[in-house]
Image (cartoon, rainbow, N blue to C red; front, side, top):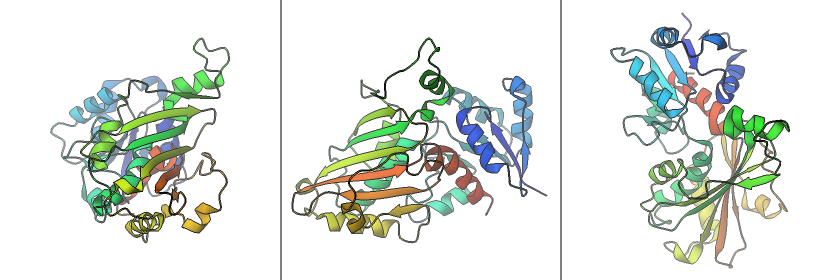
Length: 310
């Protein structure tokens, strides 16, 4: 019998991307609610109960409500793409490449919290260095990032694409999260193994999909004053054997004059770079990904496959 998969919120940006990725799969039975019935609580509860795996593409409160609907149900497994459960220790964190054994934790979990797009990039760069003892947990980490506007969902897509929208955004690029209270910060801190709250400055560019996440470091303030090669080696070893996460060779990184945030648009992969000049004492760690690929929908499908043993 084919596993039954229900995407609760399939008509939103992330849900549509997941549904598109699953459209050609003949090994799954997709349960679906018509868009007109998407707020029908009884119908949602029925689908959630019937599914083998439910993927929640909902706001935080609605995701919590969906989980509560399953009280007394011990069979439906959940992948939540909201921020509601990402720092909950009872939920497996759905970044399969994060650590050795994380793939197995996801595969065996009933509850999986899908990572955020920005945190995926930041954690991928920071955690290997903290784990290796090179980056102190209390280092003053700063994370600077730019995302495609689809990360803001249907509302922002309309604001960016429709000049007649009353809240139309005409700017080619804008910074937000100015009070430094972005909801992804706690996720970066927890799964980045940091004891000090990082400063996170997010921004949005006038392109639909893509993302660059940057973490600059002063090498003299790190344990052992590592070189660029040392940092690169640590990150490269951490992701050795991975197919989705690629650590770009130092020589190739040094040959680049610019980095395009849309390079991996429509891809579920992620590239990691170490930039800088040996002897200068500074490094810029960079993650390149698609905010809807490895950063959202692609990661949810990857987690689903692991949970199904695929």
